[in-house]
Length: 226
Image (tube, rainbow, N blue to C red; front, side):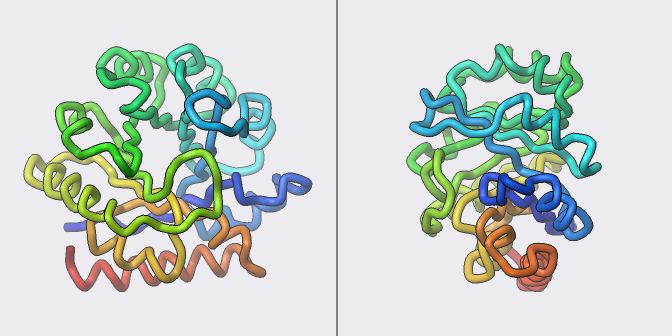
């Protein structure tokens, strides 16, 4: 039985002059809140940090899904937890052996997941999927919003889905990058459970309605099977 499709709006695409209002507007139509934390080293951009996460925690009860595009995320797990993070995802490219950081995240009371970039094969994360609450498959190159979806990553989503299902793991499969009304159905059919959407939600005139429409399309695609 497939899990229900869940929508995780990415606040990187929100209007930062009214961030609390933007988050509150989508809260009732969403499941997780995707928070990109970039250090300017692992990716060529700098984004949200701990003070922002702390400031928005009182705004919503949504799961804070913190995507750590960082070379040293292990140094920040405790401060992230204190700021209000619920889940952290770490790039396999930054931590080719993530056993220690997964244990560290658990010790801090955080959910843990691995992220895999478009060029990186499923084989890189395969030995570690059982450590994960979530596997995040990037469908764009990480670091900037507004990029076009890379269809070839759907094979990796499908490989992850097969691995998880054969072992009856509870691991969620998340996809991030270029997710919108034209791509979410294919991503769902390939096996994704959680859909990160930035401009498709926050760029819409009615962000909550946009999130609900994405969920509707994903759930319809569920009926088509993988």
